[in-house]
Amino acid sequence: MSNVIGNKVKNYGLKKEKGFLEHIMLNKSLYVLLIPGLLYYLIFYYSPMYGITMAFKDFDMFSGLFSSEWVGLMHFKKLFHSDTFFTVFRNSILISFYKLFFNFPVPIILAILLNEVRNVHFKKSIQTIVYLPYFLSWVVIAGLVVNFLSPSTGVVNTLLKSMGNEPINFLANKSYFRSIIVMSDLWRAMGWNTVVYLAALSGIDPSLYESAKIDGAGRFQQITKITLPSIKSTIIVLLLLKVGNIMNNGFEQIFMLYNPMVYEVGDVFETYVYRLGLVEARYDFSTAVGLFKSIIAFIMLVIANTLARKFGERGIF
Amino acid sequence: MKIRKRAIDIGFEIINYMFLTILGAICLYPLINVFAISFSSYPAYVRQPLMIFPREIDITAYVRIFTNPLLLSSYKNTLIVTLVGTAISVLLTVMTAYPLAKSKVKGSRGIMLYIVFTMFFNGGIIPTYMVVKSLNLLDTLWALILPTAMSTYNFIIVRNFLESIPDSIEESAKIDGAGHICILFKLIIPLSKPVLATVSLFYAVANWNRFFETYMYITQRSNWTLTLLLREIVSDNADIMNVTDPTATETVFPKTMQCATIVATTLPILFSYPFLQKYFIKGIMLGAVKG
Image (cartoon, rainbow over all chains, first blue to last red; front, side, top):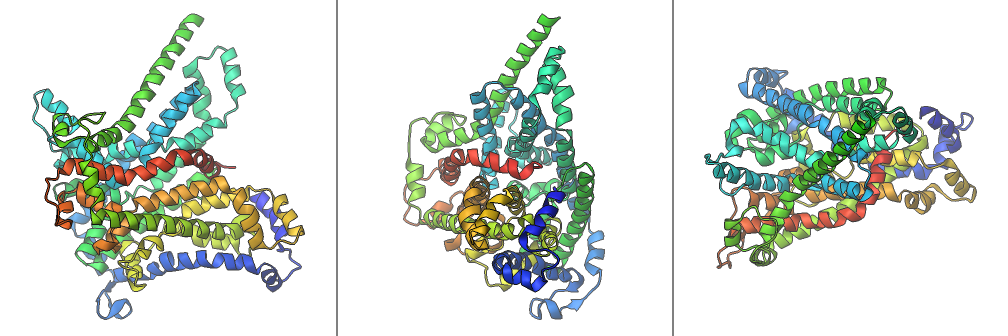
């Protein structure tokens, strides 16, 4: 890929003999096109980075960020001595890990099964249906989950009651909360996540299967000997990127489903920072919590991306 | 031996079809159930909450929600954010991706790093909130459009697609004396229809479903969007419709109204989705799979 880019460079007036200014004058409009996008990142991504200094200051609303007093690592010391912080840290990692462990293999299996379907119409219909939940907002899904698990009218409790059991208020129960998060995530994303694998599967040379059949390989052997090895690198790269994202749980899913009764098992960095910062208005302390999370996430992502590149794929880039 | 193998294959086939059908049903049932409840009378719902088809058809819930001023204004705001936001986002994305594809400008690598770095590290929730506040965007619909105007992920998809357009096309236009802007709008954008349809869909869905920013930046009810309204209805404040509509006299059944609101909020996406599906599969493959 990079060779191709290298060859193309000379087509755009970047030849050495031409001066930098001349190049800009010739291609003014290209640079003008770039300005809004660069400004966007400057304003909404890079200027908030200045706000990170808040994590090292005693932020005073009235004197503003610049003239607030520096306090060094005070907020971080407080952070490492708080129990809530460790609860949140543990929850963030555990929930991500459960999602990874239980939900990561599903799209792979699903993609292989879909790939084995010979009836095109059936395959297309199932694909359309299983992609669908991905396009729903978490608010809607939370509504569906609440509906589904409702102690009075939900499917699950109706079944429990018909078997003579007491109904359970699942969403207010610490022992079920993480499972609900993992399963609702699976419901939403399993279909959509097959897209990449299906793309990889469509690239397999059909003659491999033909010759395997002639050699007497059955369906299972074809899957384990041809299909899986062909998508191995895709699986590894996606797995690495998931591991790299282990600190990020996203705000919306947890926020829509949790309640004070399950904070102990469900509160993650995103929701904790939100409550500390915007509900309790402890801007400086919550920025410190956010920064701690961002740094760990950054390290994880860089490692994952480097490893992904080692596997010959381009990672996020 | 051979016969046994064939029997296993046929068995596999049957189980596979059954399994995928059940999976499809699991994905679809909750939506069908909500749809059926929203069109049923409340007593019918109480008797048969797990229904698949509407019973004792009753559209009071829809009449109630669609005559509610808060729902109408939220609908309007969501539409504005989705349409204006998506238009701005797609334009911004393609404008930024074009000069960077095939390194047309000097320092492309540096600029790419400047953009992609934001996927790895960002200021976080509170500092971003402060910036939006200092720009006086709080409690305006712009707060839902500008801070999320560009998605780096979508930008990469578009740039990858533009990289794959053969040079010869741009070259011949250049020989004919066309400028960069002209090439971009007359040639590149029409050629990029599948990928632009894909990212438009992604942006539109993200805008339509946007909750976090709305929840943080919007306080006035007149600026609410559907997701905020839905959250109020789905959570404890199920009687919000009554609170905001003092003229309401008839009894309201929160459950059927909840479902009707979910349907009203979701339907536009479900409708546009099959039409765009053929594009986005192609588009996402172009973006995701190594070319």
